[in-house]
Length: 306
Image (cartoon, rainbow, N blue to C red; front, top):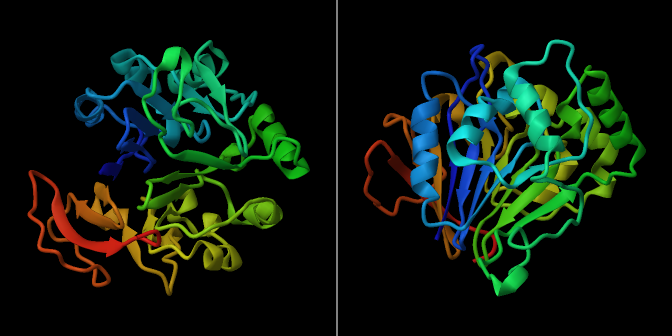
């Protein structure tokens, strides 16, 4: 079994952000983005430390350096020691950089970075065997975008270099469990940019789609792409309700209401828990699993790859 958790978080300015982890069914642990404030950073990092204590490989994937995706990155690094920092190769700048952005740049340009792009492969990310015969298993993570030679992507990189925009340097990637779940992340990539590059991305069915740009209308996944992805569940992240797109016609979980969301991923099936005891949906099957601590069972679904 593997576990995907989507935290209900905001940054120090109160802006809702993104932060996830994957506890793999191999000896891997993956953190995706970082957004914490003084109220929750200790609890979140303590949980991460506990959940990854039996894992040999820990990586951090940073989709892009907006504050609501990197807030308290330095604190995270101080507590866990980031030695595998994944990001796109970029020279993003800011006129008034925060401590978190400065630390992002330190990790981005430091000795422990790994630059991601479409089709990249690495030991234990999507390959099993490593040096000296160390076999910690694959994490099942694959990058579908960016194509670094693409002209639209180069334009997005230039805007990040100029310090004017960062969303569209976000990579697109999936996590897959053998005979089980496939989940997709797209960072804060925007709808108009996806329309420009969609013919250069191989879109396959996914079970869980984490809606880009926190589920905002500006980040809506185009309808023709959605049809190819055919997600069983779309997670709409935290953003002001008036800015959200609720993906009519698809099964959705709204993090504004559900709060923390946990996906227990088994062979052919996913069980979902949330931290709001009053939250429910009507599209999941009820396997009568027990609640646990502060996680409340809301239902299960079968994956495309049963």
